[in-house]
Length: 570
Ligand code: PEP
Ligand code: MG
Image (cartoon, rainbow, N blue to C red; front, side, top):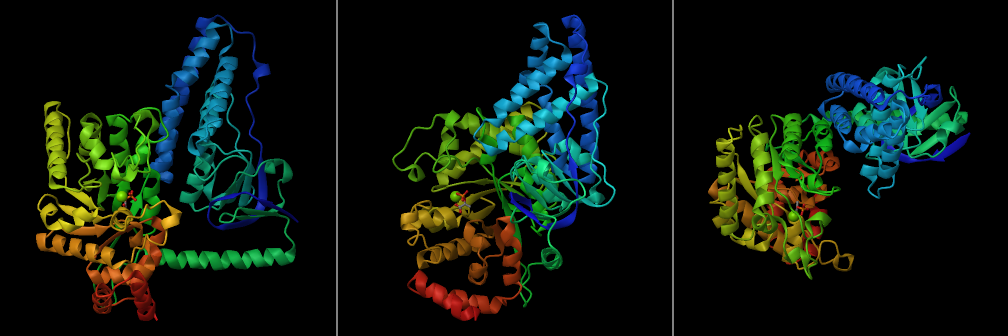
């Protein structure tokens, strides 16, 4: 028996025979001497067009079989075919006397090598996509058809790397697991494996030369373990583990479709915090009733310039379409503090969390803000579930200023005759003590609140949320925090507006009865917390939670509140 340790990329245990697949690279030697650059360029042009047609088909097939998000991979591939660094570079090499095949192969190699060297894991993994698109164009140039691995029975597919186009074409019912040399958690094979529910281990260097087709393999997509030819004892152990895991998974997924309702009939809404459109589908799978916080910073990160309006519109539309009809709260840019964008040239600040951050930044850069507001409004044209949320508010003037920019953006869109959402709901994050204290005034200005405890705690207790030295001071159950949450909920309910909570505290099952008792009905959290919090909500009668909250509010320290929670939870 051999054991290997890679990176778990999609959960689950897969057991079965290996199909080891070595992708065939197009044979450059079979190429005849280049004709004139004009002829070679025309050949490349035709191959690129044929590839585009193929990708459009593959995109619609994937959308149908796997979903919108997976299909986006092929939109990205289509975009690559318009990138001057790829086809443009190949055209130039042809000018220098290379054949279409050699030029394209060289351009692909160069571009993939550049991407692979980038420190950012997500970008580095796009090298796989470049090679994938390149191989497609090359196979058109050479009239070859891409070979697919052969499955005689359900198997574990082992390969150097799995390209998105290959993964999309594989027979899903024959796949028990994936093991690849390349890739990390953000690689497409990982994303696809997760949405297909197929266990995957990635990043196992040299594995495709270590395993032979037909050998029995065990794949653990959580720990990253791969066992080849396990002993009978090991095999029995893993089979039992697989059965236990599958039944746990079935049970928790069953809970996902159950409502978050207390035993005495009070209904809560549990929503997801996401930072990327690719997280929306998993959120639904785990029962999210909406996106309570869509952090838009991802759109601005890992790049060299600001994202344009179209790009943003597409990302917002994508999430809204996946989640519809559930609400999606899009938070405007929350940059500064701990999140820098090198290309904006933000100055170093002595106290970045107290500095030029979030809404303050957006209001003083109306051009950037305007682009984002226009994009959200455009996405809302066909998606009524979209809402807008402003981060880090301390004063009514900030809201009014943002509102006037929003109205201006609407007017511009009208003038440009571009469809957009009308009367899109606008809310704010209550994440500063100032906002919580004047919540009654702020409530007159907006349609909803969402309490951001991560920042609320750091600003109230003067404890940097990232500084481990003051970790103990950063106490979510400090009575000051509970009182500010209580004040915000009360102000919201008096004004008749919705109040949610989207800080990490919402995802803490232990705190759920307390928040419930304080009157919170909308919890937004990271997807993995949805089921544990739901379990808690379903076990705590509201009446008891209320008594717990009343008592907690009268206590004088976080330690006392924790002791109370422990006592009441039995
Ligand atoms: C918060 O501050 O609680 C919050 C949800 O926003 P972020 O963590 O993005 O600052
Ligand atoms: Mg915050």
